[in-house]
Each structure stands twice: as C-alpha cells, then as structure tokens.
Amino acid sequence: MRRALLLIATLIGTSACVVVPLSAYRAAISNQQRINRVRLGQTLAEVEKIMNKGPEQRSTRLRFDGLSIEEWTYVTDYIHHTDTTITFVGGKVDEIRVTPWEKEKD
Image 1 (spheres, rainbow, N blue to C red):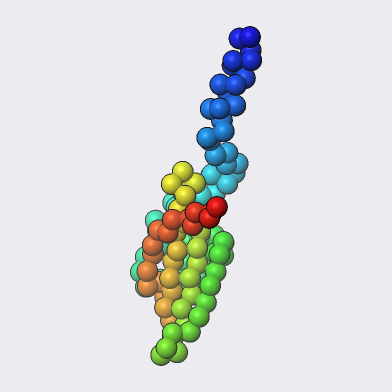
Image 2 (cartoon, rainbow, N blue to C red):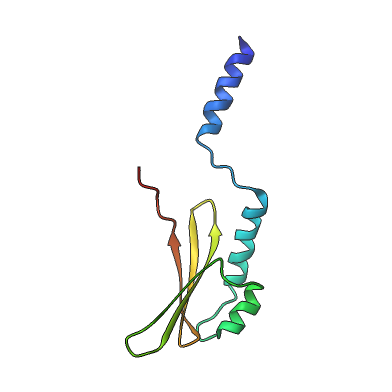
C-alpha cells in the first residue's frame, strides 16, 4: 500500500514538471552568456563570432527604404520559456529583445 501511494505521489508530482535535457539547458545558459556580450552597432560577423554559431532561428526581409532587416533568435531560458532575438538593420545590431515562447492553443 505504501509503495502504491509513493508511486501515485511521484506520478502526480512529475506530471506538472517539464523535463528538459541537460544539454539543452546548458546550451540556453551559454547562449545567454554570449548574448550578454553583444552590443548595438556590431556587425553580423562580429555577432556570429561572439555566439560561436549561427542563429537557431533566422528571418530576413527588406524594409520599405531598401535596408535589409535580419533577425537571429536563440533559446536563452528554459525556465521562463524565453528566447532572445537580435535584430540587424543594414547588417548591424539595432535591437536585442527577449521574447516569450508562444503558448500552444488547445
């Protein structure tokens, strides 16, 4: 009886938990530490060197005046479910912002 109660308590306790592989958690921490060194005005090449890799997500578009807009996104916090997006305008960092993950719709 005691084992059954312990098993039920364990299942209930873990059902509310999110399991993240340790390697993914560590990669997010590394991403955040590297992003902390990124500064406005740096070039794409400078940021890629700081990050030691390309973006995990990337989007590009042209602005109305012909300048290129490029956004690089990295997972930076599994606990708070956030990414950090670095926006380049004309090839230089123009904005660094934290963006929450979109919640799945039921």
